[in-house]
Length: 336
Image (cartoon, rainbow, N blue to C red; front, side, top):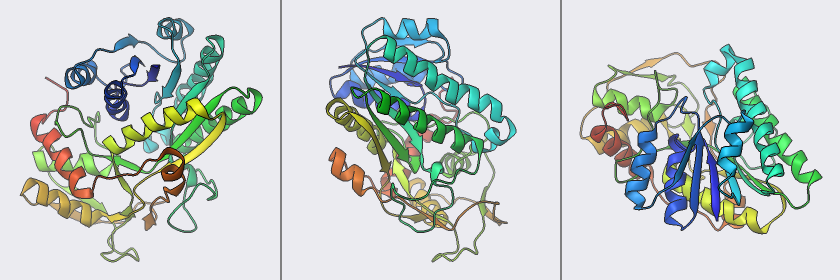
């Protein structure tokens, strides 16, 4: 199968491209490189000992999409989106244009080229603050920021398209907290500017790029007082996309699946696991809670387990060890 991966040079996209190549698929990547690097794609090809096709372009531009589809595409995995919650609150129109308009343009191109299989990178942010944990796919949808709203609108658009076109099969994957890196240490997460997520921030403190970690609150009703989240190894996540692609090829309609481990890990548990991986302490300060943060938040992945035959197998210690290997081998990320 020839798979178009939009945003394929990014963190999750590059790991998924590697998993696709290793599974025997042909890959075309469409990426505008606004938050990614071609170095990741070079390394993906070296690890896999296979080549992929790269088109530098934007999903909102028909000419770029035409170039991507001219190779003969059978299915699409759609990652291309802006993804920072705080930035989306400052620039909502930019997020709506890039994420929502880009998805519309992509679906139009798919329809024009007769491509009917889509795997979409969604997010657990569509659940907002959950009533209960673990969170399954029937939980109320309560977006609280423009980023989450853009993801929910994109889900609705894909669902409406599936309803209108019975031959279309789409899988919407709602991830919880992707972390880690490929065990080779050659590809990993390389955020631009200050990291928005816990694991890359901890890694940058450990490597000396940042002085101290700030832990937002230690007075939650959890065993150690810090927030609990569902951290999922990016390689497990990439493997789920390959299985979702196979599922979409056999099942029409729109299918929504949570991706997580089904286990929660607190902030301090993650920090201690990272200290074990590095053999050094992580200096930190406890500061006030952030508005909107919840005490506990993890997935019920039973539906994905059943539909895809997929289970997350890598532990929090694997996640920390692989992140540290990536960060220590690449202290400045993909920068030379």
